[in-house]
Amino acid sequence: MEERSLLIGVVGPCAAGKTTLVEGLNLLGIKCRHIAQEHSYVPAMWKKITNPDVLVYLDVSYPLTITRRQLNWTQAEYQEQLHRLRDARKKADLFIQTDSLSPQEILQAVLKYIS
Image 1: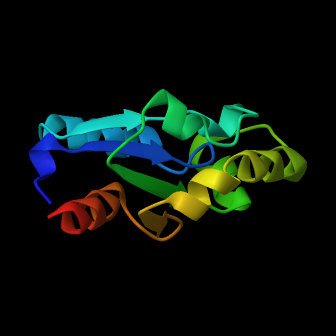
Image 2 (image 1 turned 45 degrees about the horizontal axis):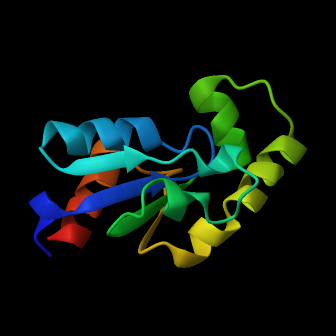
């Protein structure tokens, strides 16, 4: 894939690392958008908003969302975000479980995928 011409969409629950990944890719000149699908009741909003060439799904466990961002939310609210993300998760080109990865490792995984 020609990475410079691609539009990459990034979805996932809160605190999965979406903002950090988007910033890292943008710094490298790669077009990338954070799609706030986790806040939408429309299952395919990710496609309507951005229609990316590559859809990256970043996942994170509930306990780490609290550690990373000191979120004050319940397991039920986290599960609701996962429910809203179900279509994007199914259609994702690349799925990354971020619990044990550094931001640099996540960035490298995406760069490897698009190269």
